[in-house]
Image (cartoon, rainbow, N blue to C red; front, side, top):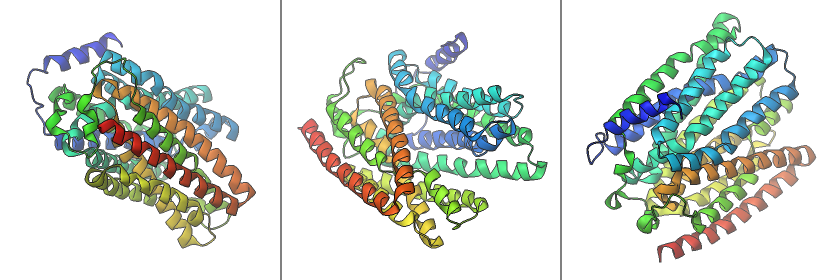
Length: 421
C-alpha cells in the first residue's frame, strides 16, 4: 500500500467511533450498488470496443485474443493474492478504493494511447483493478447483507450493477456514431461516471468505516447463516470443508456452461441474426440477468441453498435452445444465458458469505473467483469444440455435466448439514 492509501485508511479509522454504522444496511447495499453501476458504466463501456480499438493499432485477432485473455486471467487469478492480502492487512476500504481507481483511471487514458503496447497494457491494467478490489468489495458487502438477507442484498447489488453494464456500451456506441468512430471522445466521456463512482465510494467509506459492525449474531437472517455461529476469528484458519465442496459444485456447473461468445458466433455464422443485432441481444440478456438475480436472491433467503438447483437446470437448457436455427429460439436461449449469469453473479457470491467466517472471507472470495475463472475458461473451450464437432453431442455433454453438478450439490448439502450439527 502507498502512503496515500494509508492516509485514506487512517481517515476511515478516525471516523470509526460509534458502535453502529451511520447508514442502514439497505442504504449501504444500494449505495454500493450505485457505485458498481457507475464503475460498470466505465469498464463495460470500454470492454465493448476493446477488440476494434486494438485492431486500430494494427493488432491481429491473435494479439487481441492474447491481450484480452491475459486480462481476464489477471482479473480472476490475481484474486488468489489480493484475497489473502486483504484478510491479513484488514484494509478493506483501501483495497476497494485502489482497485476502482486503477480501473477508472486507465479507461480514459486508453482513449489517448498512441501505440499498441500501451493500449494493451492499459487493457490488462483495467482488469488488474478488478482483481485488486473484488475480494475486499464482496467482503464489505457481505457484512451488510447479514442484515438485509444474503440473497436479497447481493441480488439488489447485482441488479444495479447490470444497469451500468447496459448503459455503458450504449453510451460508447452513441458517441462513436456522433464522432465518426473516434475512440478518444468515446472513452474520455467515461471519466464522468468514473469520477462519480470514486466520489461516492469515498463518501461511503467515511460514513461506514467499519461495515463489519452490521454483522452481529442477531442480524444474520439467511437460512444458512447459522454456519457462522461458531466462527473462529483466526485469519490463518483453514477454509471449511463445506466451502471446498461448494467450489466443486460451482466449478462443475461452469465447465458445462456455454459462453456468450459461442452463442453470438452461432447467431451470426448461421445467418440467424446480423452482427449489429448481437449487442441488442446482449443488452436483453443483461436485463434477464438482473431479473434472475433478484428472483434467486429472494428465493435463497426464503428456502436456502436449494435455490441453486435452478443453475444447472437452466445451464443444461441453454445449448438445447440457443443453438437452434429459429430466431425466437436463439433469443430465448440468450435470455436463459443471462438468467444463469444473474444467479452466478449474485446468489453464488451470497453463499460464500454464509459458508466462511468474516476473518477468512476475502481469501475465500479470491479462491472462489479463481476456481470459477478456470472452470469458465474450460467450459468455453469445451462448448466451442463440441459446437464445431456436433451440436447434438454438445447438448448431451452439457446435460451430463449439469447432472453431475447436481450430484455434487447434494454432497455439498450433506456437508452443510453436518456443519450445523
